[in-house]
Image (cartoon, rainbow, N blue to C red; front, side, top):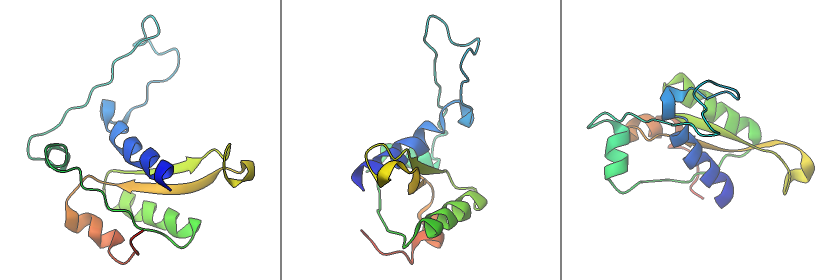
Length: 122
């Protein structure tokens, strides 16, 4: 659970780099095997507050993979920063790729709570 949550929390931040655009292989911006990622942070934005604050993270659980997918879709539909993690199954899940975690935010607590407030804490 810790590893999957770590994947999700890092993934949601990394997805903010380059305005969410992934750099494809053989992209002209890759020079000598290197490229630059950029992240623009607006002062007083939820991300700015989170980075300058205490990095609040709350872990809750879902009852099923479908419930996890539903939570992710609700977060996406609400326009919240979110990332869905699909474990490749190399060390767990008998080699079957499985959705394991969702990170939502950083954003305003009320917006996130509207989606997660009824889920049990881990």
